[in-house]
Every structure is written in structure tokens, then in C-alpha cells.
Image 1 (cartoon, rainbow, N blue to C red):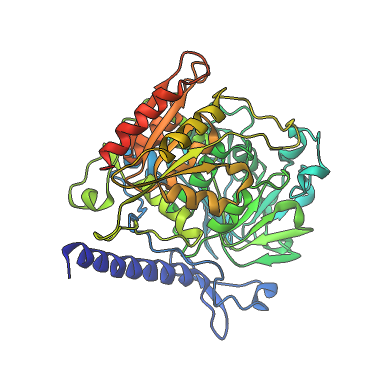
Image 2: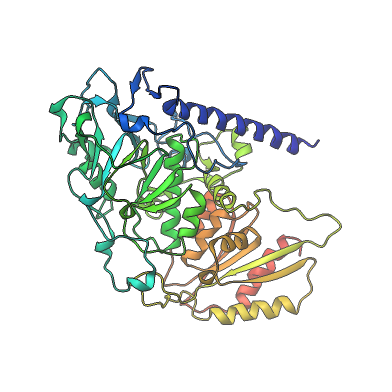
Length: 522
């Protein structure tokens, strides 16, 4: 057995063991016996409410986490340096703030307003690097009639012209409530204070910070009044999306949701609830693949109680977005090398995330190797920009970033078809707007070279293989660092053609591709 195969075998055993331990720890909070109860953090048993006793929640149902070659534990490590790569992309959420401690007998006062104790609990994990928090709680009631927004999930054609303001949530006080013991005096108390919000959930550059508004709406309710028309036993991830039809911004949301799931240590992929009223989009295919299920909040009725709920930070608070305006000096590296030689100026987190996307669609994670007897084959993927109706306020026309894109593509095709290489070269027409998300990810994974004008479709390079080479064609009107940064953080080889205007000389593009293919031995 080769050293690499031996290492991979040990890695798979380690990840399986780690996942089993995580699942066992999580289920200890939801243990079912002849007389069901669940174990709380101080190991004191808290009896269930009567309506909960009727439910059997021995098994937490949902999709298991896939085994990812680049996975590293998301521990609450106090030694993670502020503004390190792990601080930006990994487990930098290492300051825990308990806002409501679960206890059947003792009522404790939270540090930042609110207070009480009892069956419910709530805490946040703050990242000084990102100036953002991931929060989670138990025995949380959502009162959907106190949240104003459109229903969401409609077909796009049915809501043409609907305003964005209608689709974003407005929370009345008590939109969310937590069971907080038998003390009548806690009824209606706020969970958090403005001091807490300003310190741990700052507005930053976000004009309308929905997670902050949600936390501000949470009220404490005594056990007598904590009645639920429906209980949800599985872990629930609440997500609010803004630019939900744009791939780049949606990738920031995916990453935030993935990080929140890992930081809180749920043993299965959580079930997703969209806390917004956006209509359906093509990108929901990936949301559904990544998580156990998908549902819009307004599809619930009455008072819905969650055994375990997690609040995903906004995508604007991820390193992927913050890196556009601040320097994040990180470079991608193989997880194996970082395990052997830790370096807080390098990261494998985006590679791990890309593997998560590919695994969620059932695509292979091992890079395909060509047998020595075969001629090497390389796909050159040209990611196209094409017109399509994106959202209710969109006219269906995509702003051109490469005015002669078709000419460049046709020239590349003629050049490839009429030349002999030392390998097989195949030009792929990446018309992503009319492809299912799985096929888009498959095309990215199968590509040795990815070419495209600056545009959201190139964000797919987060799921490219580690040997993919990126060639971005950049109009002088759109000189933005998105894909150079993602390539850097992924550790991908990156080339750019900077244009004077929006038209590219096909011969210049061919010249760059010739050099790249030469580096691949073609």
C-alpha cells in the first residue's frame, strides 16, 4: 500500500471516529428513555413538557455529514489568533456568551440584559476577526404571525415586479420566544440588550441587519405560557438571504451556513428554514443538496417550537465578502500539509467547503487520474454570461462584461479544433444559466482550465479541483478582486487578462491558453 493510500485510510477512520463522537455528544442532549428526558450542560435532568413526552425523538433525522478529505475540526479554540487564516475562514468564533443558561432550579441573570433560567437556553459564539456572531438556542418558539414578509417560494413568473422590501422580514417584539422557567416575573423580558447587540452583533456595513433585528425581538416566556402548535425535533438553521439570485452572494450565504453548522457541532446537516420571502431560484438546488431539507418560514402556521435552532450570520460578514474591502493575507494549502506544519497564514477551509459542495451532489472527491497508457485529457471550460430572468425586479438582460464573448469563444474553438496537442483538449461551452446546479458543479470539477469574463458564475471555482487553472478576462469597467482572491485562498493558479475597454483580442486569449496548456504538457 502506498504512503498516500495509507494516509487516506487513516484519515477516513479518524473522520468516522470524530463524527461518531460528535453524534453521540449531540444525542446526549436528546436522549430517549422509558421516561424521556434530556441531559443539560450541568448534567441535571430536566423533565419534558407534557406535549413533548408524546413525541419519540430517539433519532435525529437528517443527512449525515460526508467524509471530506480536507476536513479539520471546528473546535472552540481560544488560541486561534485574531486575523489569522483560521480566524477568518474557520473556528475563530471562540468567545462564548451564555445569554440564557438552562437550569431547572437556578435562575441566573444574563450579562447583557434578559435573564432567567429553565428549559430554554441561548448562547452566541463571537468572532473578533469577523466582528460577527453565530447564535443558537433551545426550546425556541417562532410566532410566524408576528413576522411581516411575503410568503416566499413562489414561481418567479407569479411575482414579477414585487419589491425587495416585501421579501425581507420585519420582526415585531415576540416574533421569537424562549421558555424560561416558572418565574412569572420573566414574562416579556428581552433576551438581549442594545449593549450586547452593539458589541457582538454590530450593524457594520449592512443597512438592514436582519439577524440583529431577530435577536432584538426575542422575549422570555414562563413555562405555563410556552405552548406550541408544532414541535420540530431536528436541528434547524435559520437563514436570511439578500442577493439570493446572485451566485457570488449566495456562496457567501452557503459558507456562512456551513460554518454555523460546524461551529455549533450538529452531528447531521441541519434542516434549513428561509427567514425571507424570496421566490424560488435556480440556486435552491444547491441549498437543498447541502442541507437536510428546505422550507420557507411562512409555510409554517401558528406557533412553532424548535428543539434546537441556529442563527446563520449574514453572508456579508464572511471573509469571502470582507476580503473585497480589507486585506486578508491568506493562501490556500493542502490540509495534509497544514496538519503536519501548522501555518496561520495558510488555510484549507475553502477547499473543505468546495469538497462539501461536490459531496452534497454525490460527485467524487478524489481527483480523476489518467492511466499512463492513455493520452492526457483536459477540459477547457469557458464560463459564459447569458440573458435570463433572475428575480422579480430583473428585466432578463445580463450586463455584458466581455462585449465580444461569442467571437472569443468561436476563435478558441477553431484554434483547438485545428491544432494538434500532446494531449486531448476539449472546449466546454459553459452556458450555466440553463444548466442544473449539479451539472454546473460537475463542469467545474471536470475542468483543467476555467476561462471567463468577470461575473458571478466564476464563483464556482470554490468547488474546482486543486490543480485547476483560472484565466479571468477583466473589462476595464469591472476591475474587481473577487476571483483573484478566491483563487489565492483556494491555492489555485490564477492568470488575468486586463482589457482596455470591454473587448478582448482573441489572439491574446489564445496566447494565454497556449502557455497554460503547455504548462500541462500539451
